[in-house]
Length: 451
Figure 1: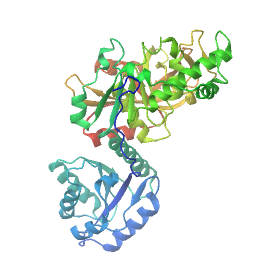
Figure 2: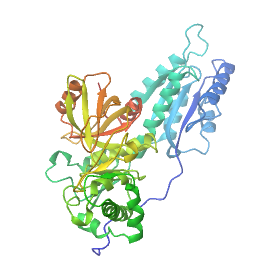
Figure 3: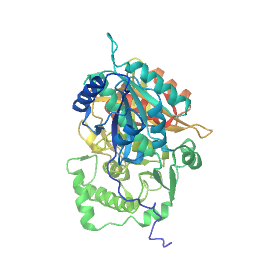
Figure 4: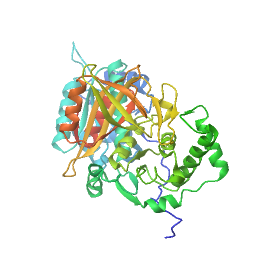
């Protein structure tokens, strides 16, 4: 292969958007009108936001086949089985035949009947969940009436977790170079990732990548405008913007040559200190808005975690961060890193005199911390912490903010993270995504570590 042509991961044809479906399960031994009424209310309440309600109640294998007509398990991200009435496992066995080996995330939804028992939905859910477990299938359990706010939130979280599970299974991660020098704990086991999730880690050599980082003067000039309102600690501001624009355009051109679902790049120290790429860390912050997530320092699990976060919400801007400081008296932690989208800034942006790093305070509001991680034996686990970024800035450089955990103290979070041997990066995502992370862990069948 020519040195000017970096190795890339083979691209796949674009797939149609996938969905989460709700399938109502019934029995001819229970009132058909009650099941039909439940289906109508369900369609009106949850037939939005990526969830579709199948119009046929599955009462037996024949009606199940009609409900799933022209659908394949690969057409869906997840499937919610609503127990419109109690039902035996006859249709369940037919459903498992339809699923085959596809690891489609499942949820079993029971209706709440606090008084007269008409549908006996809860008992049916128990029967189906037990049968699924005995047959080696995992299923989330949902409880509530269609239209209830708590139930709708749980359906939304299940759908997000199912989308993330679909995104991770069979994903292709391009690793540019390797993990950062002597960041030994960031080494990923590609064989274990392949066995667990079907993930492929495709190596791209750092020299080959840099050889593809070429850009026109016009592209560099256009990129420089990204720093139009940014203050610089020293030097000619227009010249500094031009320098950052060139680095951005070159890195963007190199990344454009790589077809992958997520990218981990060894930017530090080689690219950062290359005089042709001054301002790399600021450029990576802007590049983090791309549809394909990027994890700096060659962090493959970090790239996969960001891929899952993007599946929760394609408009989300996950960012890799360090837990770099603790204020035990104030019960808060300092989150601090580079390569963070400036769209998450809550105040002025500035770049240091050496053009090494860009600094700004992080936007306040709910924040979820998560990390897909490999244990030393290669098995997977998922870290979760929930909380919020405080409104007051913490004063640290780079992209930084005070994180206040919910459900545990700041010190307890740090001790939990360090005591379990997690790597020093964690992915941060604005919003309350804890339930989606829990559903993701269940869908993948991996251990969840939360407070």
